[in-house]
Length: 128
Image (cartoon, rainbow, N blue to C red):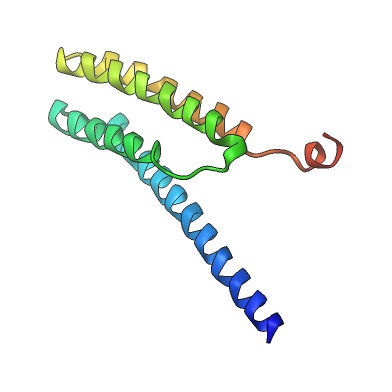
């Protein structure tokens, strides 16, 4: 009976943890989609709408649960992206869509930088 309770507890805990991870993955995928829509926009209205969507997703991403050891790193990356998006919104409000798109290219560089830091190599795990 004890084994069954422990097994059920483990299954419940793993589903909760994977649920948190799934929300993070879904949010990040939605951010990627919003970023692509923003960069492909031909008209200012479409650009502004996609940029607003990206900004809202960033705000949501900052509220997600991250592993405690990586939380500060993830929030730092999200804050850097927020600064770029805010600056791009200022350019967009001034009617400078191309300049805003140029600024947003930094988001892709930040994504690469922070995703590299997110995924620890197996060698680093074994040998520190």
